[in-house]
Length: 429
Ligand code: 4AD
Ligand code: MG
Image 1 (spheres, protein in one colour):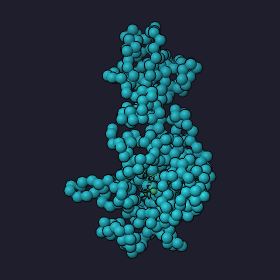
Image 2: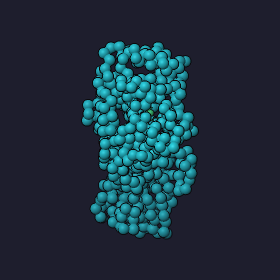
Image 3: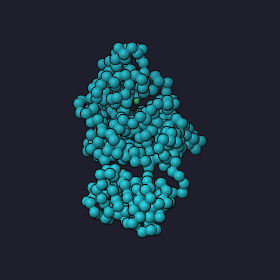
Image 4: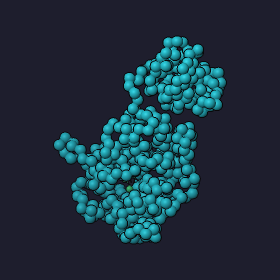
């Protein structure tokens, strides 16, 4: 008899149910009250009339404040006037935990108030729906990798060397020694493929990003994978299949949440093969659009927006110049000025969602690239070791969970995709 709100929408007329939840909204018409009861599965209207519940119950319901927790019993009734066409006519009303103060989350409060009170704002049905979609998305990622023989590995968070450049490292005092928070688990995965061949991880990465954009967090959840004996084509095919699977499967798993959000997922964007252009071709697009784009220009947020607006599907940007990419990227054997690297840009100006590449697998070549970048081979000694003992061609990629969620739900900012977002200006709550 204890049911979730979601189940009650599918229950038969006249069924007796018990619901445990929170008072989301309340309207009073004298001897008739309406409470919108919220639980993790949705919101339903509960009608409480003085004639049908005990006097004590009616009193409690009249006094109850928003966000008090309650247990109610009642009868399911189809009523076209109720949101969703179903209401519960209350027969018993009990407060479990009274709200002690006015709830700070109200219609019309600023974004700042919402995020200062993220611990309370989470209860909003829209935020709840986004977090459920996120959970479905992560589930889809696991399904994809598991069905293809990848082994999940969990890598350290404290590290001693930069993967993606020193500028965005968070330093940690590690018992008097310098350590950092990980930017990417790539190097650990590269070690793991010599044992497990195909691995993946879903863990937080940290970037001291000074950029105040709608797609940068300082802590984000990173899906990463690494594959032994994989070349450039294997890499791009795997990324494309993963992204397509994530979008289709998340949409399929999230029908109810999408209804709450009033959104549909643009599954058409991933149906056709993803487009591919080289860095050089991207520069031509930028020049045609009147932007200054010399060889060596970095592809930042503005450039990505221009490029991705030319395509209806996600687009791979490939063959970045060596000097724009981290030292571990393998140069293209047919033109050593560029690398076997690829970023995947999401449509509608969402920008980069995946960074990827083939890794240098030759010991001497890797060592000279480390030196060329002004880094110290001693700092990368164990990483170099991987090229000493049975090195193999290999490739891998990283995908940002919040960036993908922002794209498929068309969210204005990545912070909406994180339970407790961390940005340049926020580490609280
Ligand atoms: O392109 P990135 O920096 O690539 C790497 O870290 C590689 N080592 C991954 C690998 O090959 N194993 O980051 C990968 C993805 C980006 O495409 C983006 O989706 C996400 O991580 N990302 C961020 N998301 C939110 N906020 C940030 N500050 C992000 N930085 C990267
Ligand atoms: Mg990148």
